[in-house]
Length: 275
Image 1 (tube, helix red, strand yellow):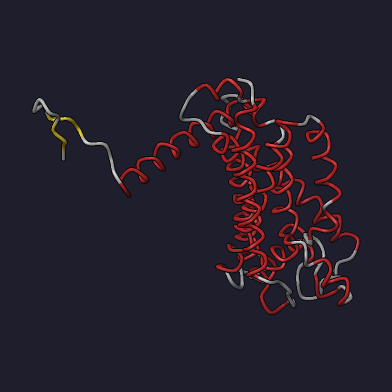
Image 2 (image 1 turned 30 degrees about the vertical axis):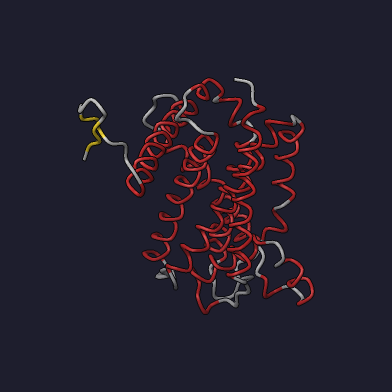
């Protein structure tokens, strides 16, 4: 379709309505894809082993933690293989920690790109997050596939498993946007983020089954959305072998609110950045 000017010359029409929205998403998708490739090249050079190392790092750390706990006590988790239990718990937490830790330097490392009108602060944060999520997802596919093949333990509920992982990743994304915005205003945020992510590990529920805690402790800890998500992941993986405790509505609500706050923080900090 076209619009006609007063002189009768046909002019191309601008996309309207849903077509304009779709075009905008496509443009931002291409921007995020380019930023993701740039981030991968910046971190690992042009080596073909770059993304492989991105997967090996969480795989080695998760495997080391699983081996240590397996060596200490073979039967502490009953019918659940303890090595698999700790890998399933630590790999998503690794993504959570890596996403937030790298967010604090996101804008400083990509300051020259902010001159481009198509590049938004959200794109920079999301591009970095995609790398970490892709690496951990690859690790979990290998581990879960290996457990199904070697010990005949496939996931009990794949939709629940994927839902828990998705919520962890979105929760991390919301915190990453807040951390990036905060670090852009106050340098001290960058110094606080790393120790805080390590301190949060005992309260994240990554290694602790909520059913093994006293009811009062469990109720208090479940106010933190993270244990709810890890409980969903464990139920999706182990099913009836464990007893899970979580609140889906509360967890989803926290994730939505956190991401909205993150978007608002990035919007507020954009005019104050010096390019």
